[in-house]
Image 1 (tube, rainbow, N blue to C red):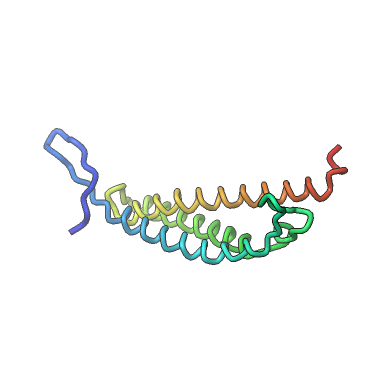
Image 2: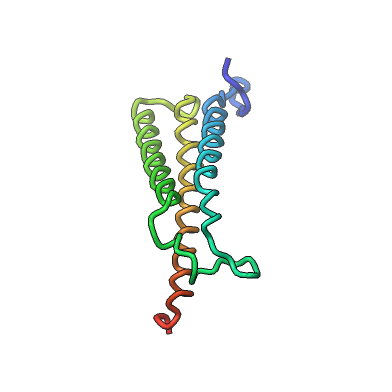
Length: 140
């Protein structure tokens, strides 16, 4: 029996919507998030910090070449694209929001897409900060 969490009032009574897809998607997103953090977090040891704990971009090269962080961002971007394709296929097939597959693909697309976007923006911010600190005379 599917989990029921959301309901809506109809003229004929209460219609319950199963949320199995949302729950499974949340578990998958949590597992993927834990794995990716486990891959990316050890890179923090390679970052050189000054005496106040700020990143010393003049001595830290990790933001200027391809790293595991970039690979994870790329893999998550491809995964998000595949989720969009899956969602599109099942919508064309005629499924609706009551389908656990539609719920799964919607949730994965939103959550993983948002995480990928935020990681990419964070990486770009670090790269631009590093460029600005390493070559300040170029920006005058």
